[in-house]
Length: 265
Ligand SMILES: [Zn+2]
Image (tube, rainbow, N blue to C red; front, side, top):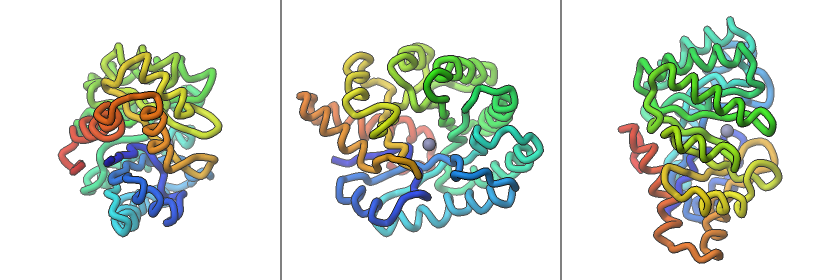
């Protein structure tokens, strides 16, 4: 089995995680830019982070036989400071040009605020102008459905092709609408919040396996870099074929990511 984990934050993981992932069959990963656990406060802080995502982390992953790609943006949690957002967005295109940067992400909304929406639109403008793939973070819990709709409407306003946008952290109450509107949907596997492997496989059994990927989104919090492997095993135990499992954990992310010529599988 040859896995792709299309959403994982390796800056917050150890080399032991890389080794375990490689041994479990994870061969390619993509790392969206996200919140560092504290607000960075300056565009220089973001430059350092983008440098890390595009230079150091791919080299670290390669030592374990894993191909590492990334996404560049200012995340919604730090989108309240407009002046900072403008400074950071000026540096974004330079890093999108890097050979392992696949697109703009993870952009989206956190609290569905007005400033977050404005900064989301600035990112969508860059994505539309450069024809970039987009990876979207959707808000948690009670804000999720409203936030998901606001984001999909904003994307439509910029005339981005929904087939080149993945709406991540989808759940039971949002996945149907995301797929109906032509977007890809991502399911995030978390041990304590978001989808458990069992819930995610229930969703696949309800909505099918077209235009859906599963990811660990492993980060600083309680999370599991082997979550995709465990969800694959859940499918196996329920009697799904190896072909279907391979489609979900390899072919689907490869098809979506392969829309960028930089992605080599
Ligand atoms: Zn994330």
